[in-house]
Length: 287
Image (tube, rainbow, N blue to C red; front, side, top):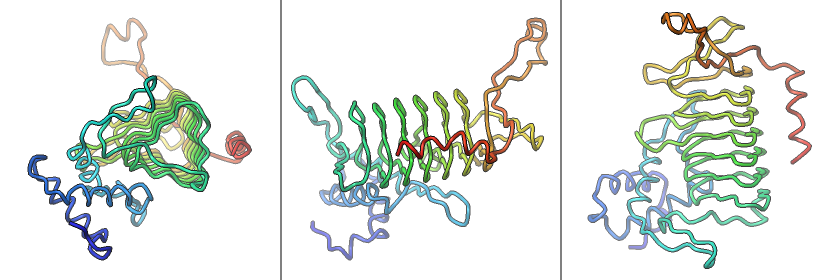
């Protein structure tokens, strides 16, 4: 079936995606792949997103996640090898993203892969090797450094710096779960890990080695508050917060007290100021 452009509106595609998602792979009609290809095009060009900010609140677009999963259901395992020395096998519905100089993206040689269905805006710089998965959204002016993973559906804002070996987790299921969200002008230090739907608000600095997950408690010694997820809401790091690795003494266990044991704890030690901005300004020179 060939759909008209009018039929292929976002509303129509969303409705069909939800319908096809509920079907077993063996019962999918032929037009399911045609709908999926149009869906993937919208995802790749940033016209639809797995999550978006509405009235300063992040909202998950459940149907978009269903569309990504539908692609795996439709997909057939095919040979995507470059030659006999570079053998690759993946679902035919998720080839590598097609990028040209007109895309305005600087990808330094050395083994980077970007899956179709990821949106990469102009002015993004990607150092080798890096991997960006389907459903990810990477906005203008962001730096993806060496050995960085940007997981499925992760939302990365403008002018973000993700330092070497940092991991930005991905999530497809459960459908309603928040993806990792990194807002504008955030700095992520080397070897940091941001997982399980954590939201980093704009201007924050995440120090090298800091790990943030849904079960992490973050202690703010400036505002004397504790941040954690709960009641269906993800962990959120406030705007301009500077988070570093710390530790907290274990006091409820005699053995731990006897041996002076402590547990890893991220700590907000201050909030970003002009001096902090000067320290992170180097990346603008490298663009």
